[in-house]
Amino acid sequence: MDIDRDSIILAAIASGKQYAEYANIPSVVASVISAGKATLHELQTIYGLEDLYDMLEIVIVDNYNNYEANRNPEVG
Image (tube, rainbow, N blue to C red):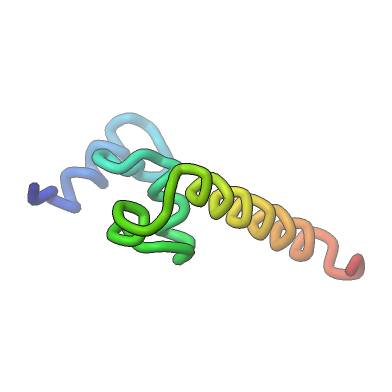
């Protein structure tokens, strides 16, 4: 399926959202792929659902820790 990138961006703008959302991939899967923890092929062939949620936990904790480190650089 070929998706027009500009159409996704225009739809996000029209809906009043600041960021575009993935139209064909569940957000859990997209978050893990976007963070570089796994590829779609790996999620489809190697990893199971528990692995997916473990990777998502890693992404969430890493993002939170980075947020806190940037917010309070003197705390470490």
